Image (tube, rainbow, N blue to C red; front, side, top):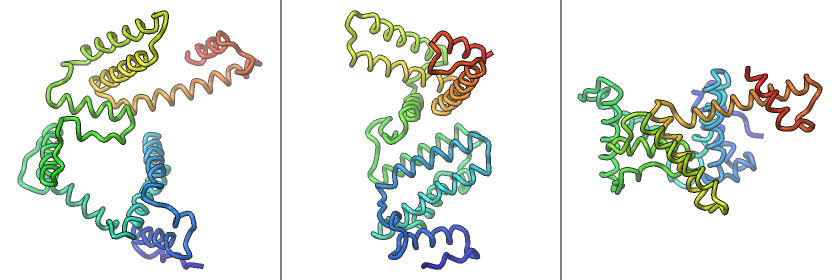
Length: 267
């Protein structure tokens, strides 16, 4: 039996020690088997769960989920330290130095009176850093991660393009493009023999255009869809309860009956 680290230590130091012991001989078999790569799904899942908790407004739950996310950073760093790749201190030092470099208006002599100026300066400093590291981007969109969720990546691609002037002047222009793309889907669906590859492409254009409208309207596409999903789940559950109260079930109800219940709970 391994004694648990003393609770009188600084919380982050105690967490780091716990993770170290879990990975050490005599520790947890599951933890010892993990690699940086095997834990990537856990990292993504915990990030989404933390975001969901924050959006719910339940700060106690958010604190718990952020702890789960912090654990993923600590264990990734612990595994990397075993091959001398980097340590948790390296991670913390790196992000500290980056924050200082990218906020010269706070920690230096630069001026930035509004958010737009701050973001512009941030991008300039980021580009300088990449150039010094020999990682200069060949194109405007090269720096947008392929690992992002599709909606989030689409919006970031559009924002990057907008920074060099490739953008609609207002949301009306983006909405006009959306209607154009929807018409092309309708045209494809009306064909006697659908070209599935073409239909998929056109549907992708519609989705990308929807993201563009959301962006031009000042919203985040991922958040907008998350809220729409939550609304659908709530209304579907209410519809199901309405059917049960009427002596029916989903299984013995047709679409017309379900639609009537849906409209009733919506009102």
